[in-house]
Image (cartoon, rainbow, N blue to C red; front, top):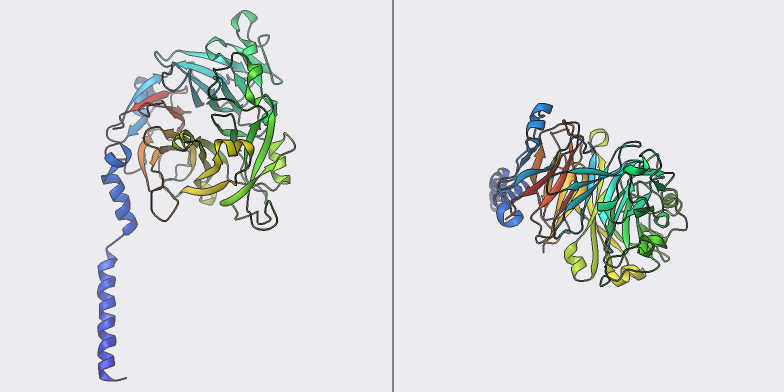
Length: 475
């Protein structure tokens, strides 16, 4: 090699070394995370986020004296107790605000415990009074959602046997027992302690599965998932949609009879991703969990077994789902859903996916190609996603963690939507809440219409009874 060439190579190598030395102290990902934290006020509407999960676990006496001690919040946010009544069930889960989210008076809540424990309770927001709507007969009541026609649906996370019920006039429905799917006032409550048995009815048309996430469009199309883990080569839970035989007209007044509900009859479809090949597509199965797909007609009501038969796309324990209200407001269907995963045994961290299904009309006609993409991919700090709440006005999702708490207690995460960058993922999430109770989890969070009041349950906490908080302070 000529001397001049040798000198060039040495200089070039020295240059590479200098660049490498300069980059050695730069962690671009950490820098991006730090920027999220320092710009949390304009991005998230909160002050300094929480740096790490709480390692604390307060005792019962401390929590009873002030239930807000169960939580630590980002700067600027504050909590007050909506209810910590002794008769509020310890596994209070998802809540539906009634009569609406603009001026809510009640939070109608599921209790995720087994029969004979109470299944549904109403919580008066003004003073925390708790009364029981369904006293027995529900197994692991989990989701609760208000419908566009003025009712509430609640359902069981009870494996393939899970049922969905529809409730009208929750203020005047009290002490109902459900026996073999039939609401009654005969047993166990005395007849004179029970009112409104005809105000609740099972909706068999939507099928049976382990209900968790439920979302209903303004015209009545219902999306829901099966809270099922994979097992012995069988995929996890699938996603479904129910299209009513008679759609709902959002201009109509709320119904006054359950007979007029759109979910009395309709058709069920299951989501199968993979469009390559002969229509509706043959390129489906393991690893096909994002991309374009098809809604496959489901002929039976046992949706868990039908998912396997029809080779529907499976996810690791589908949990809560929530519509993108900004998309809905302009007539498009977009929803995001959590899949929990399994942190402790497998280090299979959860994920948040988002599904688009065309316009409201196309979703109801089943004429659009559905598409699923990841929004959030889990990690050791943000390991297992469970509930989700869309924040009106900011277009962000508040995701509740239900992890195995390997790095501390469960957290609340505030996640940005995807911006104009090349990827489709959230532009970043920050920790805005952490629990000071090792055994508890956040669940059931829901915003009022303003996006400024956030109602959330601290489930199975150290007090032994339910605690529902109202969190405010977003700027």
